[in-house]
Amino acid sequence: MASAPNRRSGFIAPLRAAQYVRMSTDHQQCSPIFQRQAIAEYAAAHNIRIVRDYEDAGISGLTLRERPALTQLLVDVENPARKFTIILVYDVSRWGRFQDVDEAAFYEYACRRAGVKVVYVAEPFENDASPATCVMKALKRAMAGEFSREISRKVFLGHCVNVQRGYHSGGPPGYGLQRVLVDAHNGTRRPLAPYQYKSLQTDRVVLAPGPPHEAALVRKIFEWYAARGTTATIIARRLNDFGICNGAGRPWLPRNILQILHNEKYIGTNVYSRTSSKLDAAWEQLPTEDWIRVPGAFEPVVGAQIFGTVQRKLAQIRHTPSRDEIVSGLRKVMEKAGKLNQATLKRYRSAPSVERVMHEFGSLYGAYEEIGYSPHLNPERSRNRHVERRTERALAEITIEVLQGLGHEVKFEKHTNVMCVDNALRLQLVVRSSWLIHGHSPYWVARWPDCFAIDFLVYARIERATPELLDFYFFPRGSLTHGKYTVIHRNGVSNFKDLRRPDLKSLVELSDAVPLEVLDRVPSAGVP
Image (cartoon, rainbow, N blue to C red; front, side, top):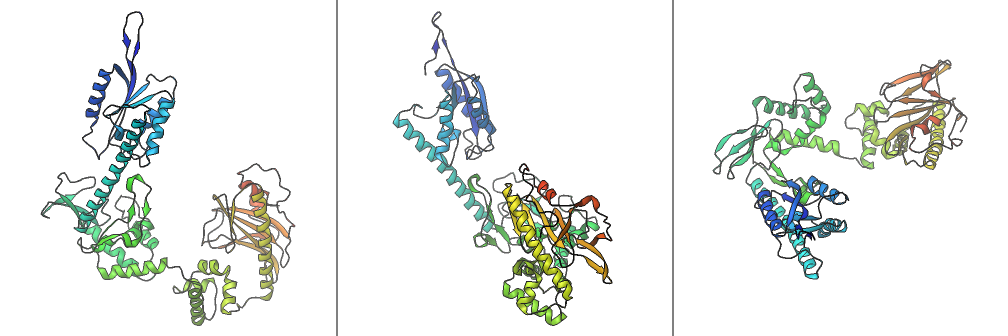
């Protein structure tokens, strides 16, 4: 590593170098001061002048992510105007503890390819291209990665032991609970406020009921939810109406209520290892059988009996009924009410939901045929519905074909007539014939669905018992009242004339992910 000599004066100009320093919490003896000192001694002994400094302090070396200094160093290496030709690093582990040894080699090769050499000042080998050096570096990189894996295993086992002893494993305590600091003999020291942590290695943290008003509110939440007909949405709305904020000082959301209702720590059970993100990997949900549970670790806030009642209610909501269960539920409702329709199914809590029935059978009429029920409908209305469905299917097939031909990705839900275009735009396509007042004066009504979310309702008008399309209405979200019928056309007059279109070109324009060049195949009025 000879420096460039000056031919006239004999002076040897020092080589210019950048130093990279990294300190992580798993190897504190390699402090930045210690690394800088070792690099400075090496630079002085080899006539090297350090002109740039890069430091990642307190950052893990498992990945390049969240290491801004090393990222910037690799960017600067590719810059022809850089002021250095050498990178000085304390040892191989400071360059990184990558779990894939080829990743560390790749970043070093990227530097060498740009004409910058990486030197590990504390390693016993010269970083040249000799076979012995390559073997030593590969071994060192593997050892650095294995060191992180071993530390990860030890830390996890240590957390498991603490959890089994009844100590809190970390994280926020939750509404109605507080963290309490205890000494090595389980003597209570004091409650910990948010962002306060233990200062002695021998101290531990346990959970205990929080302020009396918060603990009482948690018990009331469990009592409310256990009552018949109460949901998380109703409880959140009730608390907000009372002016009560959650633990973060914000209005309550249904998910905040469900987080409380699901959590076993409110009955004193210490639960750990529900999720995992070892070695900086992505977070993943672990199976229930892999969780570590310690009953009776904390003083409970609610009783086990009401907690069990709430869990059974939650499990019933999460349960997806089978086809046989849906059929059995429909027959029970039929025996009680004597008829079946959407209103009847919504009235009985033991009945399957309308959405589940439609998803399983494609429509309510499909379920009626399964159980042998004949709804008492006007024969003319039945014929109109048959024409509407047939026209809807034909219109949907043509529209999907056109959108896919223009390069769009289209997913279609047959039981709801909802199209999802490019995983972004959700619209429902419906075809409706007119209703009559006293056998004459036709009018058309539209209804925004209240069971699922859409962005647009594409409403096509047809005459009674004929598939001839008259025109289209494009209703955006907010233009119609959810779940209610709205008259859109009566006696040749429409209150939504600004949303009226003669064809479906506007539908294609809404999905303008690709240039629109061919529109002659788009279905228009008069297409059956």
